[in-house]
View 1 (cartoon, rainbow, N blue to C red):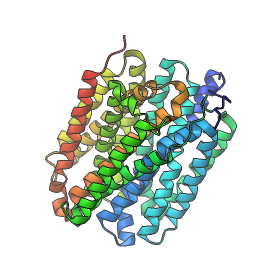
View 2 (tube, one colour):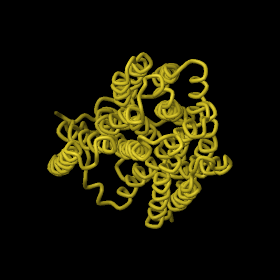
View 3 (cartoon, rainbow, N blue to C red):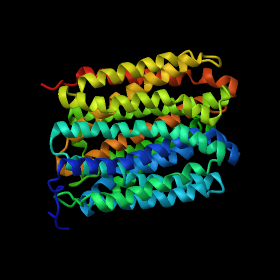
View 4 (cartoon, helix red, strand yellow):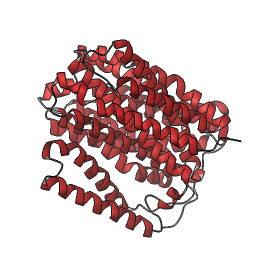
Length: 462
C-alpha cells in the first residue's frame, strides 16, 4: 500500500474551537468511565438477577476490559489511517448497539458476550479521541492542561456512575444500567459531526494481524487464569496448560513484534525509561483503582448491608478527590513537570490503602470515607503526568498509537485489578469478606509505592 498524506494533522483552530473539540472528545471518556463505575456498583444486583456468583461477575467486567485492552492499539492505527473522526463515530455506534444487547441479555453468557462487544466499541473511543485532542493542542503547556481536563472527566464519571447506578437499580433494575448510555452516545455522535474535523496520520500503517492476535491471547489468557485459578486450582492441569499458552503467546508476541517493519507495538519504545515508567505507572494506577472499586462494592453491599444507592453515595469522596485534583495535576505537569504530581499520587494512594489494611466488618464509616477520598486524590494526581509522558514519548503524527499504548496499559491494569480482587474474595461469606480483602489493600499500598518510585526517577521541568 502507498502512504497517504491527506490531513496529517488538524488544521489550525481557534482557542474556542480547540476547547470545544476537547469537550466533545471528553464525552467518550465519560461514556467509558460511566459504564465501568455503573456496572461495578450493580454487580451484586446482576448476580442476584441471574443467579450467578463472583466468578461470573468478574467476567462481566473483564470481558469488557480484555476486548478493550486487546484492540486499543489497532484502533489507534486504524484511526491514523482511515480518519480519526470516522473511527471515533464508528466506535460510538458499536458501543451503543452492544449496550442494547447488554440491556436485553437473558443469560450471563449473553451478557458477557455483549460486554465484550462493548469493549470493541470502547477501543475506538478513548485513544482516538485523545489523538484528536493532542493534534488540536499544539502548545505543550495547553496540551498538558487539556490532558488534565481529560483525566478529570473520569473522576466526574466516577461521581455520576455509582450514584446514578444506585438510583437506577432502586427504581428500574440492572438493565437500566446499560440503557443510560443511549443519550450520551446520541449527543457525542451529533456533536462530533458538527465540531470535530477529520484528521489522519501522515503515513498509512499496515495492520499487524499476527501481533494483534497474539496480544489478545496474551491478555485474555493471563487474566483468565487469574479469574479461574481459585476455582480450578492453581496447579491443576487446566491451569498449567493456561500458563503454558500464555507464556508461549507472550514469547511469540515479542518475537513477532521485534521482526516486523511496522509492528503493532514498537518494543524499542520501552528502552526509554520515561515511556516505560509511564506504561508501568498506568497499570499500577488502574490496578489500585479497580481493586478499590470492586472490594468496596462487595464489602459495602454484602458485609455492611448498604443499598446500591448508599454504596454509590459512599464513593462520592473518591470521585470528588479525582475530579478536583486531575485538572490541578495537569497544570502542575505543564508548569513543573511530572515529579510533584506523581509524588502526590503515590503518597495519597498509599495512604488510602493503609487506612483499609485492617478492614473488618465494623470499620468506622468515617475511616472508609477518608480512605476513599485519599484514593480518589491519588488517582486524580496520577493520570495527567502518566498520560502526558506517554504521549510526549512519540511524534504527534503517531498520537493515535501513543494514546492507545497508554490506554492499553490502563485496561490491562483494570483487568488485573478485577481478577486479583475477585480471586481474593471468591467463595467467601459476607462475614469473611472484609478479612479476605486485606491483601487487596496491601496491593493498593504497593501501587502507591511504585508511583512514588516513578516520581523519584522522573525529571522535573526546568
